[in-house]
Image (cartoon, rainbow, N blue to C red; front, side, top):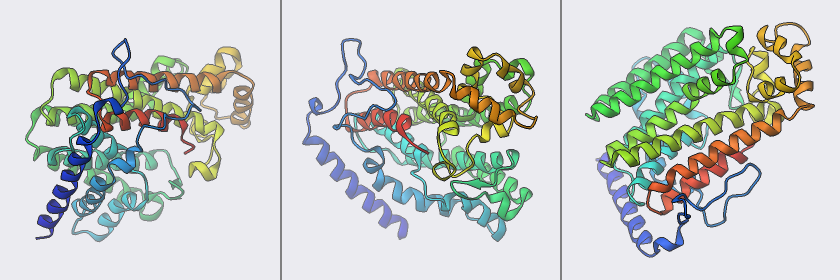
Length: 371
């Protein structure tokens, strides 16, 4: 009966969405330019055009039941395992990845609401993301996550790892129930990419540590693959063309890379309070990211610090000072902006709609966030 009531509320809301959409002509949305790309210029520190809707507000009513559904789906008979699995979902975030999947589904359909299978895909995507963070925090020895204690600091490493495994297993079951082999393969590839990305980070050779190509490849696998392939899967579940699926995959790829590059920039420019974790944590973990790699082109002495993974006392402070005296931060901002622009350009094959505009707004939001 509860399920029936939820569907009923959703049906009423979706009906209202369709009625609202019908009151606006396509001319009220961002149109394509002469290159057949959305007519927007995306750059860091540039505000989004005022007509672009807030993506999180646009999908809020669809995310509310999704939040409740995720918490129900991760239930288990083991109380400690259940508590650890729930830990991530109790941290109030914007649900960036489910929002992305739902908007991609809607934009591919010209602004129509996401279908039930696509909303389930959004849940699966968030569960995979949560599992990866539970595992990452153990691997990285992280003390905090979003300003509160990391799960392994509360429940221990074994329980945190098992909770991540449980979420992946539950996501796999839900994925199989979608009964779409192509979608199953895409999301299985996401998990494979994440593992390979983590191995690239852990097992990098000295030469790979200073390679920008290696850095971007790792960035795609660890962060962008989930966004790219879940957007593509959303299009496939909606029965859309290969062209639309490829466009959404490209959008997710470039948005995901921009997202991580901004993260790497904020590690230098953010504060412990705004980040919810210590700043300069990448170097503390022995990792060289875009600002450091760019700075190394101007200050070759940074290469030695990178190849020994900043292990000696004073390495992190010395590298941070050199980065500040270089164009590394500015070039990193340009790199993030270029990928955000490519993400926006990829949407040119989709019809103008409020959902497409919201995806365009995400390009600005990713660049201009402070945490």
